[in-house]
Length: 373
Image (cartoon, rainbow, N blue to C red):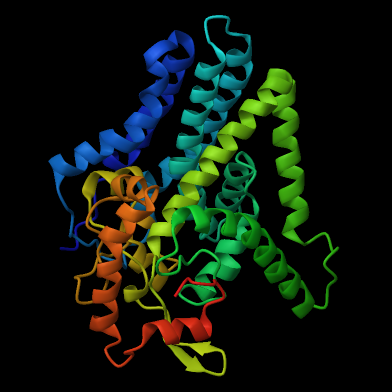
């Protein structure tokens, strides 16, 4: 099918901010509404709405995507308003205990990670200065601005190879993956930007280095948290940022787990194909995540806007058994994750690379993660 999907379901993310307001005003059990809705509500909706294997016409002009794009454009003001309200209100709310305050900002991090960083991902891939600027603001609000450089200049170029920090290695548990990417991604992003400047004959200290912008925006967010909520507000802001980053890296972990591109020799790899990303067709979660689960096509055609992302049969792209909410929960329990996914990785290897019979030796020669083959 080539019918353009209805834009309205992609606006479902707007049901989440009011839950944050309810939680901070009422407290008690309502503080759990945000994370439970993001994780379980959409999993239930996936079960009710099923899979979506329809594909829109990839040649659809931008003019017909206005309502789809609008949700990504208005999200920063919505998220920012909620964050500011929480930073001002929660530290002063006598009816909220310490645990409730922490849980509320954890829930805020679920919003800013599940939705905010995901929308920033869509925006940073566009050419418009407005969209890229909004992406920077969303990332600064979780103190993860380098993600833009790492994603565009490292991940998309080197996905499925040892040079990509966020391609999770086969048998690498999330709890080993997470600290590794926290340390390695800022370094790889910095090196990529410095190399880009060097190709233009510029020093790393040149003002066009985006890390200066990243630092200024992140500092502004911290000052804002201090002004609104004092030092308690800064601490709660950091809880929110960490929760958002954790959500992002959980998704990064599952998107390419165990998938590698063929090494051609001389440091070169085969082109990125749909087979190098895990795909998911679960309808409701794709509404929430604006088709992020159609990840195979995103890497194959990274400039394609989210309503036009295509899905592929299993003969072309590997498929996850469940949507991202359930898969990220499974990733938090490495034995469960490996039981679900390792056999699927082995099936993928036999299907797409039947000539490579000793994957342990193959990955050991390429993989910088000890024991990660």
